[in-house]
Length: 298
Image (cartoon, rainbow, N blue to C red):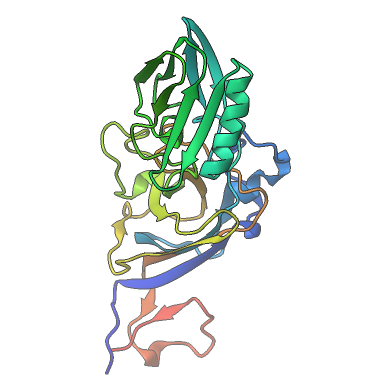
């Protein structure tokens, strides 16, 4: 006869942000959404009817609508210095293409000095900044909390040019549509699993549960399925999963504040290995046993 594991059983938790009853936090990334929408960006879930003692956990799948901003208050600034006068440029929060971001940059730079032209190349994935006036000028990306990756520059860099018609071209491929992945996070359970980031990442060890590739365009749905679902993260022995939060952050973003999902529903499926509370044989199973009361077959 079929033998099942006498110690563990497998449980799936199907989590939809619209099933939450309250928010897991009080803020999200530079949002203009109403405060009462926070629970749909940062949902809190409760499982008090089934008091699971969890031994292992894994993010099995996720469906995330791409409605969040990729240009946020954490990555939307840089400094232009013209003839020794610095000016901070702040890109409006939102989601851009290379073409739309070039147009926005030209408007912002024209407000500082006439004669700027900004173009985007879909072939080289680079921006070109051209200055018609006979001046010395530079673009300064002073830290990782600037627009360096959006525009194709290195962090902590200054790039200079001089003379009429001088140009600065992005030294690296730009990512105007934003990072290529997200993090799924939980303040309650993120530190209980061995999903690690290297030294230098912020935070290097914190609430992250899983990395989700962004495999869709803005307005579409990001689908994730774990490529190795048989492997599970150990949970602390005896840890009870009565309530926990989930939220999303941009990959490659050192700020790691929760994204505003604009009130749109998103979903995650967690796989759990939980300790079994079972009768040893089918013969001992009461006829009145309710769903959720477990047994195993010998």
